[in-house]
Image (cartoon, rainbow, N blue to C red):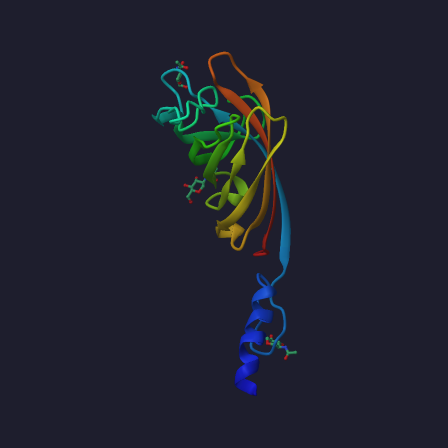
Length: 184
Ligand SMILES: *[C@@H]1O[C@H](CO)[C@@H](O)[C@H](O)[C@H]1NC(C)=O
Ligand SMILES: *[C@@H]1O[C@H](CO)[C@@H](O)[C@H](O)[C@H]1NC(C)=O
Ligand SMILES: *[C@@H]1O[C@H](CO)[C@@H](O)[C@H](O)[C@H]1NC(C)=O
């Protein structure tokens, strides 16, 4: 009977993560909610480009996908800053790629690590993986994990284009809300 109860107990403990359950059953850590606000600089033009096309767009056998850049993949190491100007205080880099994955509209699969390089979060990383349809005013992508101060992170990132330049460069405003382990 005791043996049959074990999987149920395990599930109960797992559902309480990221609260640590010590041997005597008391909580030793709590969840923390953090809101991060910064600007993402997607520079595709010029010698200082930080978003570089590694695979060009394709056309599907049925001829769809032209106009939505289907198949385009750009590797990014984009600067993150406190304010909208690229010269404003740097807070990190967005490292990953965006890949046009929709035949009907411009929408990217966007897996990336937000690598923080300033202040309290210097050295901590948030991992984002989601759908980014850049022509929409507000996009939402899940935060699927993190490291450093962001261990056990779960949450979402909201992206809103602040400025889109004729040369294809863009400044995107991000609001990221994450629940993670409190490690003070
Ligand atoms: C539970 O264990 C922790 C650390 O092992 C200890 O500090 C705490 O006093 C214990 N709580 C109770 C109610 O026994
Ligand atoms: C590239 O960056 C350097 C250093 O910030 C700057 O001096 C130069 O003007 C930039 N070049 C272009 C093409 O934007
Ligand atoms: C961030 O951490 C690295 C490595 O510990 C350190 O070299 C760097 O000076 C730190 N940057 C800031 C802005 O604190």
